[in-house]
Amino acid sequence: MKKEISILGIESTCDETSAALLKGGRELVSNVIYSQIEEHKKYHGVVPELASRAHAAKIATVIAEALGDRPLDYVAFASGPGLPGGLMVGRVAAQTLAEFKQVPLIGVNHLEGHLFACNFEETQAQERLQFPLVALIVSGGHTELWYVKGYGDYKVLGRTRDDAAGEAFDKVAKLLGLPYPGGPQVSKQALNGRRDAIAFPRPLLPGTWEFSFSGIKTAVSYYLRDHQHINIADVCASFEMAMVDTLVTKTLLAAKKYKVKHIAVGGGVAANTLLRQLMNERGASQGVEVHFVERKLSSDNAAMIALVAYKKLQYAEQTGKPLKANINIDPNMKVRRWG
Ligand code: KG4
Ligand code: ZN
Image: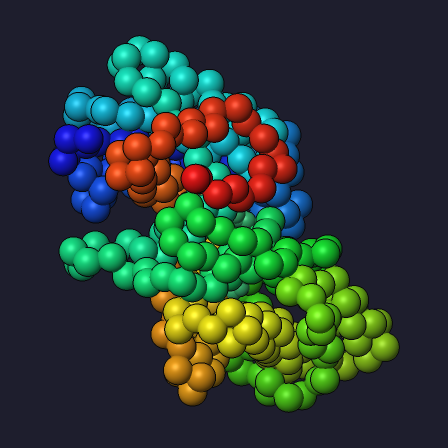
């Protein structure tokens, strides 16, 4: 593999249309993100049909802006998990570009992208992630806990049984009449509230590494139903605390059980300030170092897709094993070992 290869990443799994150009595995030449939030706002969540249309309308200009007239060695796109319509738009755009430019096409798991985004820091030449580690991937569509031995070497410990963490934030925001996306809105309100005002449940599901957040959301809806005068700030602060406490407690338990000294946290919810604070504090007291994704790469973006593709190419070269191109889209794609 030549040293300065250029990979164009494409991301279209949910409600961001994005393309990014990564050079030599570390230089992010561009990372163009078109967010569809305005389109979905009035529905308080992502409407799949609207998302597909917006991806179709935007993807060509987003790619043109990210690539310009620069040279290209590979095209990578997120082939799953995600909404089928968005995945199809991404695949068609990626394949068309790859065939036109006569370069190989690589499919990438979107959730691996969220993990690899934790490895990126523009100002640092060195890699941040140290293995083995426990990874918490928390977004609007997914909440997963992985044991990661090295690049491409994963064991999924648990997933959510119902709502994803971001989804719970979005649904509680909707109950409170706050705009979509709910996470940042709930956090903002919570700044003026008391974390211990209301005792919402912490569903730890002992004996499993799974999560379940619909019970916390239901507890909030019962609280709103049963109280006439509510303090929104207290509800938000107590809800956020219940969510974050559950995420931090389970992740640190997993780190202890698997005897790891490193944790990585990626995905849209990784932008949450309380999560960052408590995971860092409690992690430090357990001798664990926590690597949070940089805020600007926490939500969906194509840089993370190109980062995974680069590592996959490197892995194929180092091990002599053929690269698994994974170009068939799969809305329910599970993370798989590379080897
Ligand atoms: O990773 P992402 O951009 O999209 C998916 O792949 O789902 O994550 C979006 C999710 C939304 O549910 C949003 O409410 C949540 O991340 N989120 C937050 C915060 N910022 C975004 N949740 C809690 N606190 C935040 N500060
Ligand atoms: Zn995502």
